[in-house]
Length: 353
Image 1: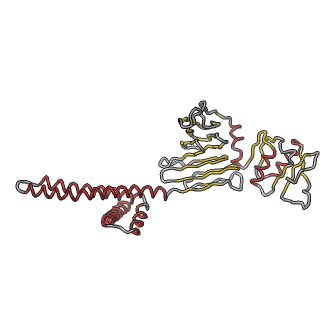
Image 2: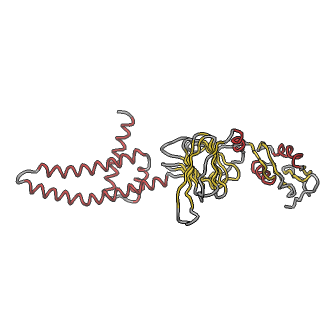
Image 3: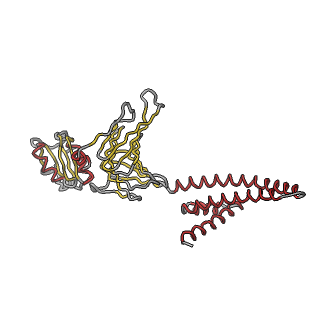
């Protein structure tokens, strides 16, 4: 006999013992022990259900066998015996019903106890990956807020705001999905980037395919709901502005250059395309001890290009001439070596803000 067979037989014996204890009456402590035993493994749950089903089936077969074997003068005695069996089976049926309810509740309890909620925050180092329990990896761009909910049957990443790159470890028994408001990205074995954009979403597939669905909100009636879906394949992007679904959204294929620009942050680099200097500085400050401070007079100037996320000094050197800014030698009062002040080349900084 294999080790697995011996284990199965041992668990079956335990299941018989638990059924007997539950039928005879069980204290609160006993029931707590049962729940712990029940949720210990799928084998425990399987053997308990099999054993309870066989037990009830054998009881009914015994009652029917007595009636079928009765003959002649023994017929009345057999009928009375069957009547006693039927009377005995009625409370047994009630007990079985109670047991089924208990098992259902136990399954529900197991689901809740085995479901984990992990809050995810962007790492302090640009490009750093978060490795999940199932082997999947997630990168969060700043600012971003997300939560990973894992149960026995599913894996769900809830993206509340910001951008995330996900590389999914395939497991058909526990499908992976990303949820952002009314939008759901159903993974089909992929690497993809999702960005929550106000009331909308943008999804870029790097490998594999995803199915994006949205619970559409009707403009005519708030209670009217429908579902819209779009399939997105490798190197394709789809952007849905909101959940009104006024028109069908279509995926478009991107060039390698566009994909590199959109995923530069995952490699510890920033790509800007006409972004405001004030917003660019905020991005750098989230990842670096050296902080940049911008004179409001130059905050609206536009930045384009690729930059290393962990090199704010190099960034400043690159934009000094092109944006007409310079580094202020020191702030009023005590100079700080961990702060770089960016001011207009022809003005003084307003450092009071």
